[in-house]
Amino acid sequence: MNNNLTIPYDIFLDKYLEVQRDIEYLEYKIASLNEELDVWQKAYEDYADILMEHGLI
Image (cartoon, rainbow, N blue to C red):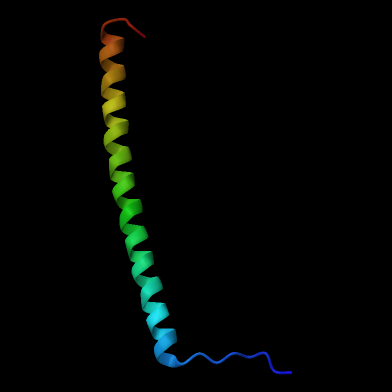
């Protein structure tokens, strides 16, 4: 019994391009979240500096 499935090229290409778009979107979201994380990290460090200046930590 032959279990090889053949997928028409156009369907395969459509799925491939869809996955590529998904990957690009996820890469964009990861980069965006990393930028947001950097901003929060900087704000946290600035806040900690202020607290230390006032002897609160």
